[in-house]
Image (cartoon, rainbow, N blue to C red; front, side, top):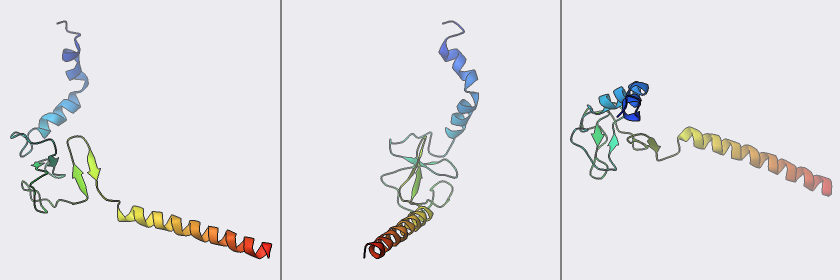
Length: 112
């Protein structure tokens, strides 16, 4: 293989990513492996089993586990809409209904 082969040049271009994944591999429970649906603690990066986990704290560091958010290998999944988003949605819906009611009221007055 030449020194320009992708396997030899990639490491230097992605040094930060390689260092990040090397650090992640030292997190609690990672060396033991796991199943496809495991998730990770937001604080210590430790592996938490998906199927048989019961509790509200990380088994490795004791950090609180939020039931709405789970961190997987390379993404974060949010199960429920945050309350602030619901509030904004209801406010926009209320304003739209008030405007619609006003338009209908004016139309009724004009047409009568």
